[in-house]
Image (cartoon, rainbow, N blue to C red; front, side, top):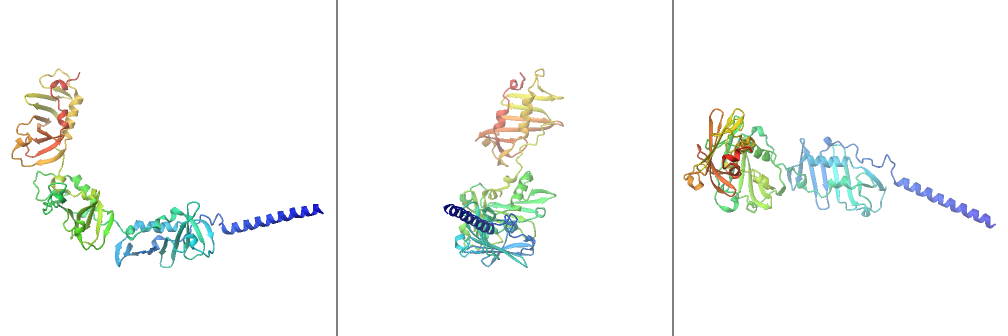
Amino acid sequence: MKGHLAKFSSTLIAASVLILLLGYLYFFDLKKPSEEESKKEIFTDIKEEQVGDVELKYSEYTIVCKKEEGNWHVLKDSNRFKADGNVISTIIDNLSKIRIEKIVSENPKDLAGFGLEKPKAHVVVKTPTKEYGISIGADSPVGSGTYIQVDDGNEVLIVNKNSVMAFLDKSANDLRDKQILALDESRIKKLRFQWKDSSGSEVATQREGSQGTPVVIERKDGDWVGKDVPEYVEIDQARVEAILKTFLNLKIDNFEEDEPTDLSAYGLDKPSAEIEIFANEKPVRVLFGNKKEEGIYYVKLDSEAPVYSVSEFVYRQVPENVNDIRVRKFVEVDSEKVDGVEIRKGDAVISIIKEGNNWKLDGDKEKKVDEPKVYELISGIESLQVEKFVDDYPIDLATYGLDKPEIEVTTTEAGNKKITILFGKKEDKMVYTKLADWKSVYLISDEIVSQLPSSKEELIKN
C-alpha cells in the first residue's frame, strides 16, 4: 500500500510540475512577442513629406510646429517663427524608427507605475489622413529601456531609451531656425562697417559717446575696393571673403528676447559695432551690443525686434577700421627673381650677387657663399607681414628711428627692380620699418633683424 501511495505521490508531483511549467510557458509566450514582433518598428508608414504638423506636449507647455508652403514654423505666444527643418526632420525620423524591445503589459489598469499617467512627453505627428503619437513614461528599472504607450493602443511597451531622447526637454527655441541671415553672396555689392570708436579694441568702454568713422567697401569688377579710401590702401580680398563667410550664414547661439522693451539692457540702444550688408534694395544691418558673458555678445537685426546672442568670434569679424582689412604683406619681392642683396649696418656693407645659378660675395668672389643662408634670408624678406599700421603720413621719422635707420636692406631683381627697406627702433618684439620710396611706417616682427648677418664671414661656407 505504501508503495502505491509513493508512486501516486510521485506521479502527482510530476503532473503538478508539468502543469506549472506549461502555465509559465503559456504566460511567458503571451507576454513576450515573437522574434518577428520583437524589435519591430512601431510606425512603418510615416512619410516625412506628408507630415504637416508636429506637437511636443509637456506637463507645463506644448510646442506646435506647422509646415506651410514647404517651410516649417514654430508657433509661440501667438507669434510664428521660422523652424529649423533639420530638427523637425530628425523628430519625424526618430518617431518612425522606434522599435519595440518588449511588451510589458497588454491592458494595464495602473499607468502610474510606468510613469505614463503623467508622461514626460507626448509626441504627435500628423498627416492629412492620419495621426501618429506616443506617450513617454519612466525609464525601466532594469536595462536601458523606457516605457511608452502608443496613442491608439493599450499596451505598455519598452523601447530603447536613446530612441526617445530627441523628444525630451525641448523648448520652442530648440526648434527655431538659428540661421538669422540667408544671403546670396553673388548679390552682395557693398559692405559698411562701423565701431563706436575705431581707435582700439576696447571701444565700448573707452569713449562712450564717440562714433567711429564708417568703413565702406564696394565690389568692382570682382574685387573689393575701398570707398573714399586712399589709393595706396590695398584691400585684402581673402580677409573680406572670410568676413562675408561668417555673416552669410550667421547662426546665433541663443534666442534672448523676442519682444524687448529696453534695448539698453543689452547695449543695443547704442551699438558698439555694426555691419551693413547691401545685397538687395534694402540692406541688412547687424548690430552688436554688450558682452553677455565671457565669449558671448548680444546682437540683433536693425529691422527686427528679437535680441539674440552670438560668439565673440562673430563680433570680432567686424573690422574696427580700414587697417583691419588692408593687405598685410609688407613688400612685393619675388624670391625666385632676386639676384642681389645688400645689407647696410652703419658703415658696414654686405653685398651678395647672383651670377648664373651661384651666389658670390661682392668684392670677394673666390669664397664660397653659404647659399641656404642666402635663400633663407630672401625668403624671410618675401614673407614679411605688417603687425601694425603705424602712420601713413609721418611728420617726424625720428620718432620711429627712421630718419637715420640702423639697418637698410636692398634687394634687386632681374630687370633692375630695386626695393630698399629701412629698419628703425624696436618696440615689444617688433621693429619700426618703412620702404625708402614710400611714406607709410609699419611695425613688423623683429625676427627678421636677427636673421640679418652682421659680417661677410657669416655668409661664407665653412
